[in-house]
Length: 113
Image 1 (cartoon, one colour):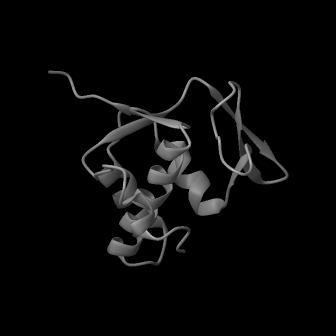
Image 2 (cartoon, rainbow, N blue to C red):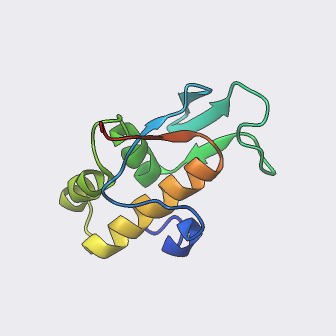
């Protein structure tokens, strides 16, 4: 199930108690079963390839990033669906979110003060 290593988010401060939502500057489209994230503004994506595709696990994570559900809740829901240890699923969630934040495709929802 592993998509990216947990170390991929080491430079970002991504935590399981945080909530994220897709950036307003990207569009997600499903094409032939693959979810493609398309930047709508220059400088989003900013990597070797502007388009970003998600596998089935990534799609399941993406669909739960609604700005209300914490990453811990996302991981818990996925644990019920996948036959992988909770720690591995948490690592996958943190890794993907870290990568998407780095690409400016997700934004952190700040808790109400």
